[in-house]
Length: 350
Ligand code: SAH
Ligand code: SF4
Image (cartoon, rainbow, N blue to C red):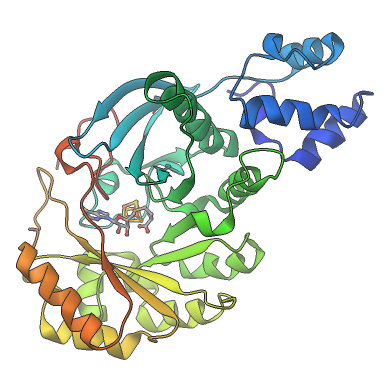
């Protein structure tokens, strides 16, 4: 599939090591990194300050393929959803969400997902394969170029969230490598506070977060009791709330750092007073931040979204109890770009 190694899979250090190994000057790495990650120029023929010998060598030995944007839809609120095709023809979706002073990219980490949450459109696809780090970085590069060419030449993606298709901890090494590349000073240099990894709570992989750059961590909690979580997320039958919170305790929290708990609000299921109280028993006020996500409906799903009043009430109850709590406004719901609505070119049936 990938005959040559992809140019988008090297950290700066790895690029330097490769240059030295091939008998080139180490410093060319900074120039190459600048062309790709600062100027967003992906054709080595255009790297004017890089020697012709190096450009030739890269052209013949390294793969420059980038995920191809085959479809783009824009929502009333400015959210854009992109369908991206990989080299082997598999497709994933990614979303850009504009806000004053920032542009957040929601990237996919897998084609499909194996976790099978009952409320998630991606789950309906099943699991196809992991994405390579170059395909995760590639979503960023293709879309950043597209935004510059089509929206605003001065605009750049400022934040990255691993909240597209897939469970990032099922693809630990590739997601870690992509994160290190996004953080490179010589490249896009996205700070750790501007990146978030969201996990469904894959307990056996969670200790590996000790070996992951210290970006924001979000846990898809969605229920305050095993009863309800079992119904929503089959993973809870294997790794219940007790095991999940034991694993969360091991995540190192620097000063002022909180874990985000994503809590999907589903009408009549987990939006009651006893759910508020359950959450308060489960979560530490100082170390948690609750992010309420009103369920985004899609055809074929059995759940309903609660009313706006209900969502506000739920949030107020938590605020009244001194929790940090925000509600994620449904971005891009009209183009199925909101949380949990991402699928792919395959039609979703079930
Ligand atoms: N797989 C990871 C990250 C991607 S999903 C995870 O599950 O954490 C990003 C967020 O969207 C998760 O919190 C997920 O539970 C939520 N989500 C999934 N389906 C949704 C839906 N239909 N409506 C609203 N949020 C949904
Ligand atoms: Fe996978 Fe996340 Fe969807 Fe669950 S919510 S099926 S973990 S993508």
